[in-house]
Image 1 (tube, rainbow, N blue to C red):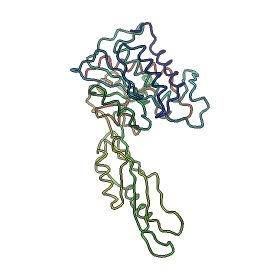
Image 2: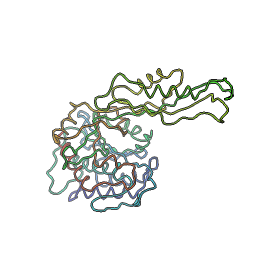
Image 3: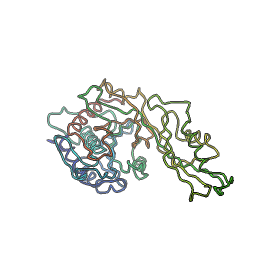
Image 4: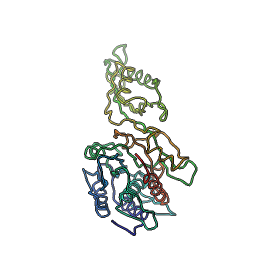
Length: 376
């Protein structure tokens, strides 16, 4: 056990080390090494690793108790060109820590990791009340390839973990307890499907009335998709969003195209499974063909009566509960889950991404207050 440690200062120091260690998706080995070494140094629990996913299991793990997963991701997107700070040099100005991944998702990761260490007895902070042993198991997982929903990310680690009953995914949703309604919790999250559309026609000369224009067939199908209405709508996530984003056809101006391909971005909700959505949209545009690239990124969420959500509302009665349009590792979890973390989603993937030092401090204290008396 490490004592005499200021937890929020340790978390902030680790975040700065992460920023200084480039960790773009699928190239996260260096930051995974950094986190693995840190975990081994500060925790009495066994540290496990699969590829660039690293996790710790509560040393007091008991298979008869329910298990809560704390998850955040280690990877980042590539920096955009308009950064004015060096994205890989942590820069603190007036309490803001600038750097790639500071907000998405480093702040959530270091906060949840240190809360895990505190609640499992690996570390203690002077002046903080001793934490009683939990009535449930904790697992902390730092996952990779989240930004690209890669198959070497969380989905490769989950089969190696104990059975997970519920998950708290750390992502920047806003954890500002000093502002009314400023603690924001995503209780549902849209899923994602990418559909490849193909329309087949018949080639001919554009100067004559011949051929079947595959481009027109595709346009008709795209218009049907644009106007398609699903009978059911999610109470938390609203309607399913169907957007055609790419179209390709033809080679030269005087030849009727015999093939047209297009790409459709579909943001699904808990009103339907991805498979149901794909089937209904295919029926709507037949004989034009729609092929899902994958149906694995399902919508996710948690029941309003779940003990984890009830505990959050007990601690923060004015918490704002919302449905999130953005994707996270929740999409690959089969258990109830919610998304809650320091920072602001609007800062993610932007130039001069930052996190407030106070946001990390608030997150550690709020996570601890919620979890230390949670009854699953």
